[in-house]
Image 1 (cartoon, one colour):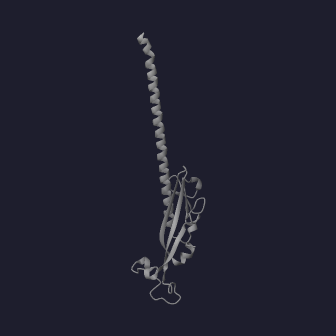
Image 2 (tube, helix red, strand yellow):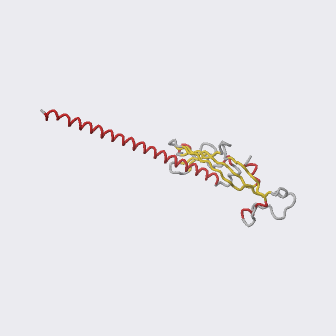
Image 3 (cartoon, one colour):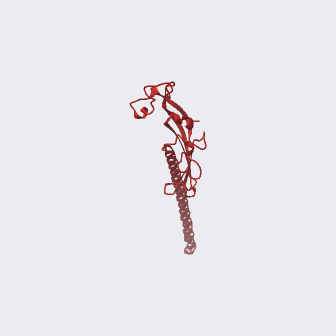
Length: 196
């Protein structure tokens, strides 16, 4: 009789072990799925950050950035000062093909163009005339009445500081915002149009 009483116990123990193994397998699957989502989101955010930085680099590398900050993007997609990147990482002008959409602004100051924070004329006395860049700013040794900068001591150049914000949104929903300040030398003729 003792053997008959033990026949069902083995089956019950085997079923309990099978249930425990199934729970461990489901837990491992859930953990790996969650980790995969986390890594995917981190990758999308990193790519969005890189697209935002690429947008800023694209804007500040343009030679007419100072004279036309509201049209800082050559071929915008969808709206002014908006860049689109396709799945291969190349710029596109078609919003529907965009994996990453970057808006270039000067937020919080300006929602349309990069913001000029400050501009200051460079004094002629601050120039180092042995540097070719400073030679281009010089108004000349012999100054006559009526020559630009003759009475104020200003050179033909100014230092401008801009704040550029790039907000990138990925097709996956990931977002990244990069705000960068840049200092550039501009012509005093461009002071009025770049910093209003």
